[in-house]
Image (cartoon, rainbow, N blue to C red):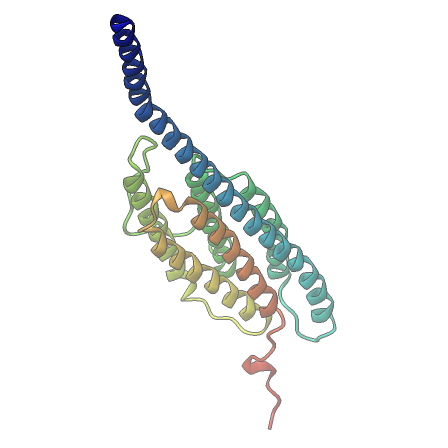
Length: 250
């Protein structure tokens, strides 16, 4: 009986030890599962937030089309209207606003920077083409300060800084030519609109100097939102007939 008692005590003790050994492992697995669940919830919340922001931008882009249709009717009833080139530019911007929102919906942390570069490059090229037309120049002078080419293998900060420097140099040369141009009447509205676009691009490049990859969604969504705001301002500018030449004589 004594041996049986000792064997029973040994078994109980062994089971107790095994139970103690399994405790930390079970606790560790629970902690990992809890952390994974929390991370999944955070990702889902971030995705919902991005979807809501994209939906709001889509609504604003849709409203642009209504405002543009209304403005077209309004300016036709006046003796003074915007140039055909500016009307075409605004019509194209209105269409591009909806496309920008659609593009935003498929933007990810992996492709956002390439898309951002492409959009800004295209914006600068569009401005350059308009300035060439306004200044009646076939070619634009090369910037006095040239940045080196952007290497695809460069680190993010290096690639970002080179990109910003290169576009700022281009905009500087474009702005210098535009400052020499004078205009009156409907052409003055187009000149003001072009200058506003250049100022906005310069502002965007200044902000881009300190951006980090983690801010990919904020940078991308803000670009689309500000683009819509600029188109709204362009539409409103078409209705601006308070220039010196339109003031009534005393």
